[in-house]
Image (cartoon, rainbow, N blue to C red; front, side, top):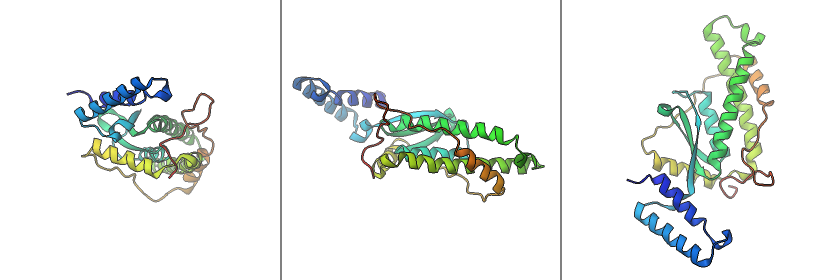
Amino acid sequence: MADRSKIAAKIAALRAKTTGAGCTEAEALAAAELAAQLMAEHGLSDADVEMVSASAEEKTKRATWRTTVAVTVADVSNTAAIIHPQTASVEFLGRDPGPEVAAYLYAVVVNAIVRASREFKETAEYRRRRTTKTRRAALIDFANGMGLRLRGRLFEMFRPTLSKEARDAARAALDLKYPDARNWKAPKGKIRFEGAADAGYRAGGEVTLAHGVADAGGRPLAIGGARG
């Protein structure tokens, strides 16, 4: 059986052959007819063709602050996310260029929190914890505080391109692609160490963030269609 993702990519390329892209009317018509034929033969819908995916490395096998990061970047990029423990990756599905943006942002945010967490371990706020359990709790509070600040910053940055319609379409496509997948929810424990959470929140304000992709003029690309 042919790889549906490869067929979908071929159809998307055919649909891109329009007179506006420099093709003649005959070439554009032939491409459109072939695209329709391929869709019928392989049972593909518009959603199958429109949706693309991109992945980022993810080593965790249980819900953690990383799960919250995945949800955040999926929301702001108008995509849907799924973690694949077996391949140590998180996949983002949605309309181009959303998944590429999400994978980029995920790596940036996770790396920033990991790096800042290492630096937090050198602070008095962390060192005053005397047991492995309390130090682990302080690290979790730090990471959650930092993630909260970054979530707010990302939503503000992407506010002009947020689209409920695009997010809903991405989630529906993800459900179709992985009908047996289960939802992961990040644990919602109470903050134990306010000082650690505050330190994380401050650290989140120091991270350099960018949209991830831009047009030839350096302007951020719109993600997922109309604002919703």
